[in-house]
Image 1: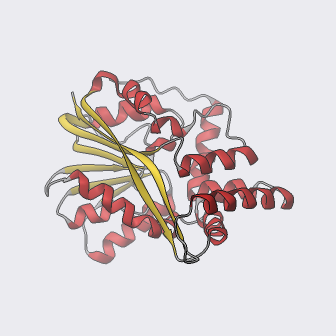
Image 2: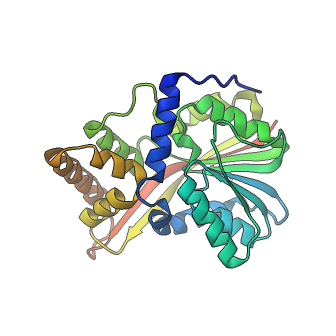
Length: 275
């Protein structure tokens, strides 16, 4: 089950860059518009109170806090120090006892078989070494427990958005596309025999904003780390071209007709039993 964790200088530099990316913008503000879809995902899981749950790449706690409110023994982990602090502050404000750790999905700081459920919603799919993500999620989950992911599909709206960004700012050459996690056969291959009864279901994640698509793009640029960093790396002409292309994408996929924005982004829900 253990995968050797070698760290080349190139990978070390990439991971430093990724940490900076996710600490850019403000995912806590960005995630406020994601709460509806996150809770829809979470409610389907029917995790009972008392369950030992690990929320990998928990962000500012958009699922960690709701889990704790239900009496689940939840631990959150995220790469971004500012988001870990936001999650801790929110928990303290509500009087919730939650452990939230700064850490890496590729090297979880927990003993083997520590959790009943190991979950990651649109988070650990962005780590650069997916084979380590899979092996670590399996390692810390007890036999008979559940491993759960929610991952954007390549063909869905967010997959399309990353392709637009990648046209203007190509991703690092040593970074496999995070969108491969949105492919069912790739998920099955990565978890291998570590999971039994693996079920993969497609769902739509609602992105709803009370403003027009062009303003949605502005919002992503200001608050969403990957868009923020990509946009900031371009000159003025490049920024305009990227903004125009993203606005066209959001406009094309917008189903709202009242001047607001409503886009349904496809993702896969991956649920398996730890063998």
